[in-house]
Image (cartoon, rainbow, N blue to C red; front, top):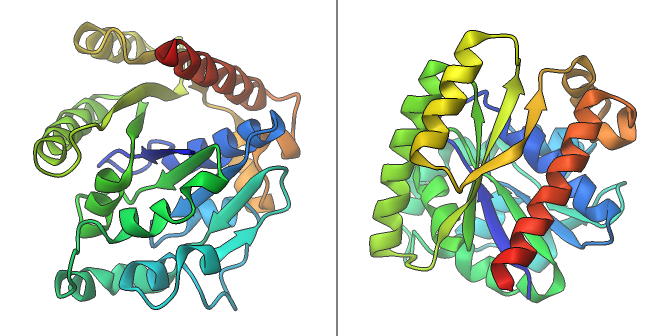
Length: 258
C-alpha cells in the first residue's frame, strides 16, 4: 500500500510545487508508481506536469465535495510512472462549501484511501495557507515533507507549520510525522543561508536532508515547458540535485522501515 506525503509550508514561494513535480518524476524514473494530488488553487503542479486545466471536468475540487471518486479524477501524465489529480480554480472558493459538508476534515483522506494501494507514493501539493483544504491534506497524510527557503521569514513559517502539525496530530492524525525538511533555492555564498541552515538543524537535527536544492535557471524555466527538470535539462545542477534528493529520500524511508 502506498505512502501519502503532504508537501507543505504555510509560506508561499518556497519550492513546494517544484519539489512535488521533480520528486514525482525522479521516483517515477526509478520504477515507482506515483500519484500527484494538486490541492493548490494556483495549479502550479498541474502546469508543471504539462497538463492543461481547461477541459478537465473531474478535478480535486469534485473529489473534495464528493461529486466524483478519486479514481475517476486520476489522469495520466507524459512522464514515466506519474499520474495526477489536477487542481482547479474552483478550489479558491471551496472553503465555504467544505465548511458546510459532513466530515469536512477527512474528505480527502476517505477518497485517497480508495486508491492508495495502486501507488507507491502519493504526493499532495498543499496551498501556502492554513485552510480547510490544507487541513484535509494533513489529516490524510502519513508524513509531511517541508521545503524551506534559506531566508529569515521561512523560519517563522516553519514554526507556524510545526504548531499546526502538532494540533492535527493531537486531534486527527496521531501517526503523522515529519518526513523531512528540504532546503530550496540554496545559495551557499550567502551568510544568511548558513545562518538559516544552522538554526533549523539546531532544532531539527534528524529531519533536515543533506541534499540541498540550488537556485538554478533551468529549474525556473522547466515549468513553462510543462516538464520536470530531468526531462527538460537532465545535465543541469537542478536536475542533479533532485536526483540526489530522490536517492536520499528513498534511503531514509528504507532505513526507517528496517
